Image (spheres, rainbow, N blue to C red):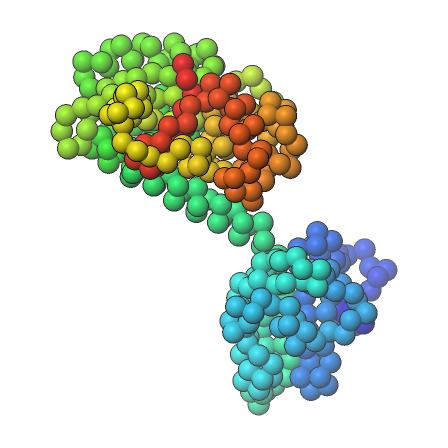
Length: 352
């Protein structure tokens, strides 16, 4: 029997939207399901949405033990066992991983409530599971991207920053630490990171270049927090969503010019290093594609590879020894992308 049929007040002829109707609409998305357990009769019922979420047939009997059996072994200790629920009335909220019968993994949030008799004894429990797999994956990708950016800034003074428009004023904390300025100071004067003698030049030049709506590079001299100054290359790339010719945002890649000079040293002066190709990761491929304003399809077309192959390379499913990597790197370099190894970190820039 379906969980919805337990409500004797539900009238299918009523024009009112009942709670059961509402739940059916929500469960139609395939991201949630509910269960109920009557401790007095021992009866357990699952909604159709829960069966779909768990990847089970509605012919399978509803069982809390069956549900626990689908939980990833490393997460099982997080959930309450049957005795804790039935005897102690304990049922908390948790986020766990499920392994469905077909082998696919999902991350779900579990919420539940136990009902008690007037004497204080647990008599029933109900709960709901919500699939948050995509949310968790996005959060993990964001965390890894933030780690990569922080590492680039710390190890190689390479900064990647995106804003809706130019000039840039909302730099990240790493860049502000480099130039020794507070965010309020940069908001008040976008030229403040640049040494005073160059500000008139860039006050006129940057808006002119930005108005063209095309990628461009400038090389201002920036003041440094510890004193002195250094030249940095700022490569700015407009990003569009296809609905309007105007950029929806600008991405800036800021790299020290000293790194470019070191790259041009004669071989006998350069220190041994691993080939840059071996250090290039999926995040660098995505950054290069972003600088070119390319989609995955664009990169697949230019490299002569399939879309799935390019996606695997960006997601790092294929390792550095993949035979497809050289084709992708060659296509990006033909379009003007430069990969540079700076103190063990890969800097990505668009050649002028």
